[in-house]
Image (cartoon, rainbow, N blue to C red; front, side, top):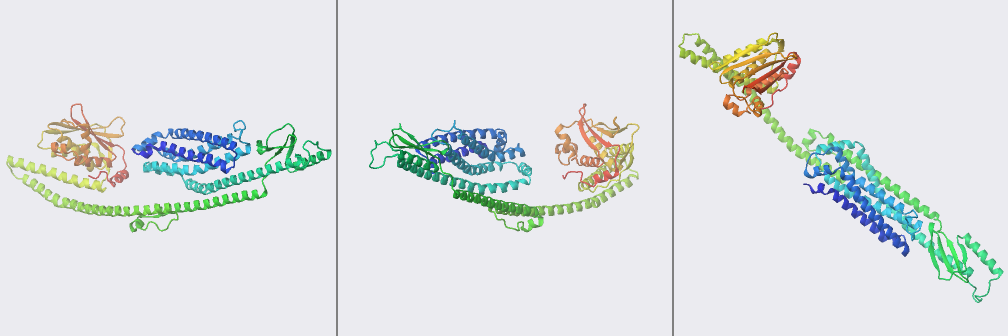
Length: 640
């Protein structure tokens, strides 16, 4: 069992948990320093980050189980090396890392934005501070999502390598031409996203420091203004009531401070120390002890200066340049892949044999490695092609030897055998004794059997080579059946087997090669005679009710064959037991089936209720000369 496929789900969960732990712990550790948070805000931000991190980890675990639930059977099949997987499962597995990465990022975004709701936000965090914390978390989560996706994709790739080649090929075809476009977009995202994350993080850092510096400076300004306006002048008695001039001076000072963004109010009942409190929407309240009571100074964070817009514009330009760079890299990679595809499609047999498959060099190392692997595969193919060429040469030599053998058998064997049969016939015309006549009959019978065997071997070779000549002509069924019966009787002389022909009246005329059909039917009848020790072998020609095909049945009365042995008798040299028992190798039946198939006919064998066998031959009543010759020109016999 492959451990990568068996443990894929657990590995995906572990990768996501590790990424969440690193990203949120780093956020919790660096948020107070990066955002310059006060102790109370720092504690609140730590709790927010940890809660969101735990919820994101739980969501990633549950999402992994849900996304991969339907794919568990496919993963088990890949783990055990089974082919029970289709292209849809491969495509679904291919998209799992992207779905998990996007789902985790979106869930973290929703949780982070939810903390902006006043009811869910800790009291120690104002809206603006919480917004900067949210942006920092999203920056860390988005930055961590990229290596998480790449790592999950690598783990998934090791599993997809186990898919059967034909299934993987079908899945690639389903992706279509848009796959390269998606690769280009991924290059753009891989280059532009880190630049955008860095720009966002830098802007957060600059903004936090700018706000902190501005706030501290304005707190100092508010304290100085309150003390300058409301504290008694040095040398005067603190108990001396303020004059009308002093009151008018204070009112003018308060108005002047308001024009600078400082709203001052008096609290005569306050008796405490100087305090600074940050309220909603970034508003700050400074309580400055004076006499009597205290001055309450409220002010907001100053607006961003035009210089900040320049920094933002520079960040946008940097992201745009990164996107352009990613586009160029994606286009270059797409060009390399197209080059590899074009080179592999263009490489023909001649290029493979010469070893010059790759004629251009790729710019990317992985594509270059692919082309080198293809070139190495071409070397293996060249070795295979060399061995195949040797095999072809050996087969051609075998064909030449077979041609010589057939020519030799046609002339060197049939000529002497015909001479023997001819002289036996001449000798039979002279007065002979009974023993001499009996011996001469045996010579003639065995000679005809040998001549039939030689013709069968020659015609079998012609069928295998697709060179069997046929001449379809209108032929009567009775002529075919009775000719085969008479020839089989001559060959069965000296045995206890009787061969009888039975023809149903009203038989139609067939368009067949009568000589070849007689040859095939004779071979079937002689096989039936060998399976019959004694008795009658009936040859019945009938026309079923449909009237479309002629049926010829040849029945034996001997012992039948088991089901597993019946089909073997039609294959030459594959029924050794029947060859030993019945003196045949199945060559005649194989030739008979080939001749019948040329005429669009069939032959089958079955056991009878009486324990014997019956051969059923089916021939079409209507046939076509062109189709018969076309089938004869193609090899109808499997190579033996």
